[in-house]
Length: 157
Image (cartoon, rainbow, N blue to C red; front, side, top):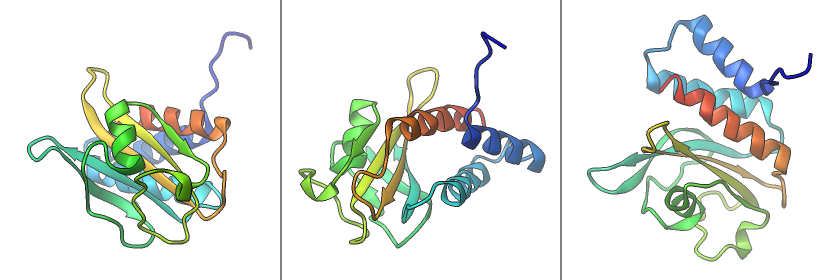
């Protein structure tokens, strides 16, 4: 079937779960289940969560997550999370210990991927942040799948 688009598995799982739960109108529930889907289906990760933009205070605030307790508020431009948010692009860090300004939440984390969440009107919602205890854990294929996942999630938040 040429010309058809392949929907990555994580995005399929997310849509199926939300529509099966009939939770389309409950953004917090959908963000929470999105984290569970990632945590259950991506190996070798130790933290996954959202930082959501609070426009009034110009800060990224910890949202639903799984992992050790984390920094609750991050300024745009600070750490991997803040830099990804400001740049509006995914940042993959193979070794967080070599990333200038890295904010340590879990001392077991060695690599990280942060995907910005931007709606179709260009409004910055926040970021998806995932850490791994492995060095160089996140590859191009996973980056593409996670970016697609975030786009799918935007339909439900």
